[in-house]
Amino acid sequence: MPTPFHIPRILRPYCDGHEFVPLEGQTVRDVLQHLRREYPRLHGSLCDETGAVRRHIHLFVNSDFIGQRSGLDTPLQPGDVVSVFQAVSGG
Amino acid sequence: MAERILISIGTRKGLFVAEGAKTRRKFTLRGPFGGGIGVYSTLVDARGTPRVYASSCNPFFGMKILVSKDLGNTFQETASAPAFPEGDGRALANIWSLEAGPGKKELWCGVEPAALFRSTDAGQSWELVGGISNHEHARQWHPGNGGLCLHTIVRDGQRMHLGISTGGHYLSQDGGKTFAASNAGVGAGFVPDPYPEFGQCVHKIAPARQVPGRLYMQNHGGWAEWHGPGGPRPEIGVLRSDDHGQTWHSIAKGLPSDFGFPIVVHPHNPDVVYVVPLDPMTRVCPHGAPAVWRSQNGGQSWQKLSRGFPKKETYFTVLRDAMTIDELKNPALYFGTTNGQLWLGREGGEEWECLFDSLPGIHCVKVAVV
Image 1 (tube, each protein chain N blue to C red):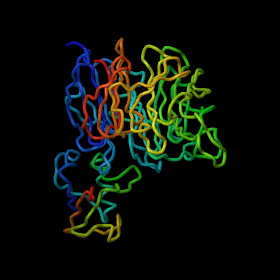
Image 2: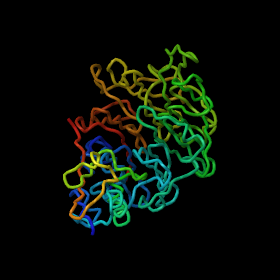
Image 3: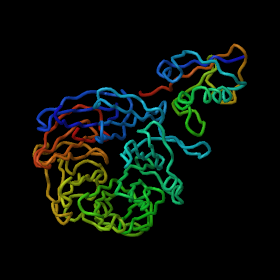
């Protein structure tokens, strides 16, 4: 069952304007790989060439920051939503 | 439409474009484009239909290339930006240089970590140039304060000169396929060996197009007072080559400081060269009194140009790509400052005027007659 991946407004030009992109995978890493195949420019805005999530990008599964779970290996269950947030910038 | 002067200004908060008549009496400003995102390199490619390019260096979402085909009235993102190939292990951190190549739609791009990319379709797609990006020295270069960046690309027929901080000067003689370090006479102050094979902190290289083989370099100077291993290295900051960059010699004598970032050559007189000496510690003009210094004899002597600048209490930095010169018969200089001023130096820098005084901090300035 695909996991809805929520896209911030600023990045929607890279995914045909969609607010949610359905992505297949058992983990956050899996859905990012699917994202890379479907929308490479969107993936490039979230991850660098090595596959690492960019420093100022925070990914959440529901209300949990993946850094406080298992990072990219955080498992996904039916009904989960993955969301993209920009890290706080400024003072 | 009459020819216009177009100034492309990369700032901490996006790109601005100033346009004016060739009289340079008044410029109108538009922007910011790519709002809020730092622009570290820009290019006005005046060949054919003019195009303005800018790197949009987004700390959140990565690097993009912007292009305008309507003289900087609107900008679009190109289909892709330079990116290291999968498995390379490096990730793009910044885009420092954009230069036109010999082909009609050919562009070259210098990035951080230091590497070179080439596009043959006006920036829509990019390929890594392995001759320098995977050079045997590449993993031994170190970042300077600005990062490990390939910031200068100078083409001269089949020759190509690259400036890397801190890597030094690299020379290709086969159109950019292979490169060799070429730093004879280029000093370094931050390593025990004052004249290493490579690893210098070159700040900028500028060609004197009328004289084959003549180049000028602003290197990282400011080491006259160093008394550690290797001893003092006076006057290593401003250099000249007359043999296509094979060897370099100092022309810094007579300057108030051999530290600075930009170096600019007069478009019609190869003996006229400009620098902005900065105090090496504070990196502002000595004594808070801005001045551009000019040599009219290829670096044998220097004159201070400060008419129109504040006389004191002015503390800004002019970064490596933030000074340029137009190519009109009687050329004018332009430079941007880290505190957001854009200055115009009429009569070859004899008379200075602040065109815009409250832009965001300026990284780069390019000018063309279009």
